[in-house]
Length: 105
Image (spheres, rainbow, N blue to C red):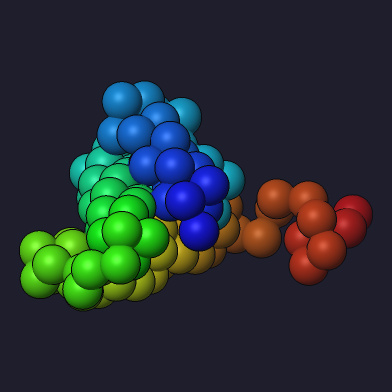
């Protein structure tokens, strides 16, 4: 779980610091990549804090739960917006983009 939390923080940090080169599933404007990155960083911090307190034998503190609950809707929002932007870009291209469903002339 700790490795997963650190991976979330690393991946989210890359998206925040380099929003013009976000990870593959995220596209669209810079603010979408940064929102996704911040959500992933918050999720990673929440998971790492929760795991640390559980390993210490204590009950997780409420700020960690708040971070995880805030990260979920932000992730869903940013992935949805990125999907809409990719859909609109494909639609504007008129299907001329190659691939599985592209035009074959």
